[in-house]
Length: 214
Length: 214
Image (cartoon, each protein chain N blue to C red):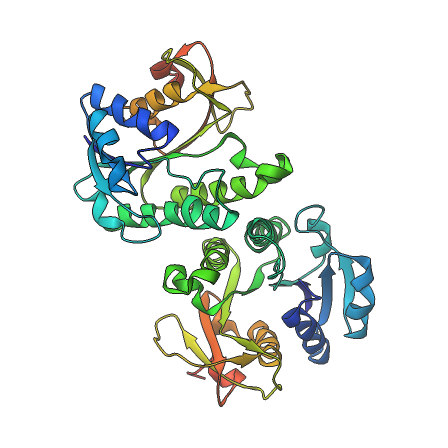
């Protein structure tokens, strides 16, 4: 599968590109600057320029699926949260609809389900993520929304804990490597289409966590 | 009709409260501080406390319709744009759905249809407004989205120019007084339900501008 990773140079994005390549997919690494091309190639991806605030849609050409893991990051202002995390996601969704790219995996955030229940400092971020998630869920795309809790640079264990929306299950931090592996597994798991799933550290093999009835 | 005005102490909100009272409606002025109660009463409204970032839904009790004209304003950070203009609007919509308040008039902004086509400085604001508009339009409510262009403190002439979504018509600034009068007229105009309408200064009587086939 040709999979475009939007935000391919981010903490999760880099790992998603390499895991996709390892799994036999053809990752397209969408980045904002040509200086990031080499890093995408090193991980087995085809680098392409895409600016979520500018020229963007052509970067998705030929993709069968899109993974959105772009974000303005913590060093910019909330204006960039609006423009990148929210509107950039909206533009990505719209581009997929327009170009008949049906499959979309969104990297959201654990507390996006209830922004005002979170600490003050992250509420505006969670509003942006939640609204992006809702736009995806109400789109015509085959969507999966992943909401990992606190991210770490820990090892890839291939084991996680996953809580579907109907579950109140809670849990602790999860490594970016395990999140990336979960993204790849989602692309092969029909039953997660239409689902919003919170992700924690855990002991369940990823495929089983994503498809508990299998 | 009992009409709750969210943001009743704002530039448009104050005028909406007084026009509603003059038209024989019973306006409920939802404000954030008790110090604003007297100003609502002076305009013929029943003041109620409602905090879009806190305790809010009870302020809408008994309302038949809601007008959303709250905004964080230009003196706060973009975090407040996310929390008030966007999430506050979402909470208002959700509260209406929950309390069976069917009619909702949103005061949006002229360029919200295409945020990235606007000048840099207002793009993040327009993203928030657009996403709030879209949440309303995809809700089950009887919604009207009004997108006035540059606002002035000019006189109430009772005449405007209105461009429905299919129209590319453009125009110049409009007074807050004429916007407020347009809001009141919308509540009596069945045909604007489901419509998104850009508002400009103009020479057409408001009722005729809102219902050109009448």
